[in-house]
Amino acid sequence: MKKQFLEYAIPSALAMCVASLNTVLDGVFLGRGVGDLALAAVNIVIPLTIMFFGLATMVAVGGGAIVSKNFGANNDEKAVSVFRQVMKSLLVVTLILSMTCVLFAENIVKYMGATPRLLDMSAEYLRFYAMFCIPNLVGIALSSFVRNDSRPKLAMVATMMGTLVNITLNYIFIFKLSLGIKSAAIATGIGQTVTVLITLSHFIGKKGKLTFGRSKLEKDILKEIFSIGFPSFIAESAFSVIILIYNIVLTKIVGEVGISAYSIVNYITTNIYMIVLGVTFGAQPLISYNFGAGKSKNMIDVYNISIKFTLLISFVFCLICLIFGKYIIQIFTLDKQIIEIAYIALNLHNLAYFMIGINLTRTVYYQAIEIPKYSNLIGALRCIIVLPLAITILSKLFGLNGVWISMAVSELITIIVLNSLVDLKKCTKKVMAQC
Image 1 (cartoon, rainbow, N blue to C red):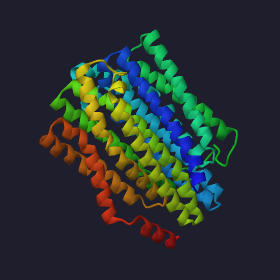
Image 2: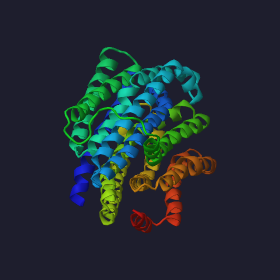
Image 3: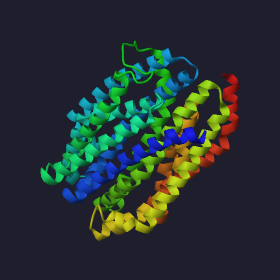
Image 4: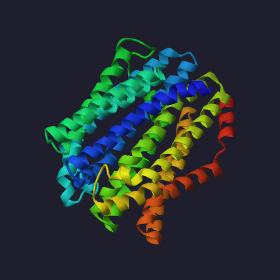
């Protein structure tokens, strides 16, 4: 089982690692080529782009879980139908989101906390990002389905190629053509278009079981997809809400300097988050397939390996940031005040990732065995119930350091509450007995 896990998890984690490196370089190029205000302006929009990512992840994980389960149960026809319905519905929703954000960019970023100095830059970034909404979201979904169709390495290659294009264009647009903040959005969109074109070859060339074609939207199937996938949207929204809440609190405590420092922390910690997410994405097809095949021991084994893997990754990342954190931050900015704030924030913030890996793995596991209520509970605890309370209380008790430590406290409380309510092994046995 370990070998199978590594065959799926490593390509997925590597793809996410390269994608996160792209995000980091976006920040470096913007910070050095446009300025610290550009970092803050993008940070205003990030909660919305993460929610878009969550939407694509929702249909990809929800649809992917059903597809892999049906592959495991030798019901390939239904798996193909589910895939086609996911892609059709995602295209419609993405088109609506794209038009809305292009038309109402200023109003949206104002609502999200953009200060007068950040308003124009934030709106410009959002407008150009939204123009590429379809490849941005469809690329995520197609890469996920390629993994579910037994070609995790192709998904890795597609993501990496898109990222390389993105990095190259970012450099050209910002430093050679001086296009400003919209450069990052345009480069990302073109890079994701490359990812889409590469993954399309799998489906058009009929290299696996999943193919494009006509398929009528079925209410029950869509309901099942969204029900299973919704916790992934909540999980990503949790990250989005976290950034939104932090932006609002930091604006009140230290102003735009705090948002700039936090934006750098986000750029750096995107690496660990995306790698951990990649590990859980790699585990999902295996859990879902074994669920369909009725192999509960394999499901638990994949879960345990995933937890250990995420903890190891988190430890290595935290150690690197503790030792080399200031040098990494200086890549983004030379402002001494921002560097000091960001270094403390980074190392306190990183403590949360030991727990985030556990919570994300559990979220995906309960989705894969079609008990999304527990995954929804994890998401609700993380972003809706515990985090706002933690930030409010800890910021009053410990000031700025209380803000930075609040996410770790929130994630830990989520683990404690879930452990007291649900026994994962007993829950698995109960579900398998009902199949």
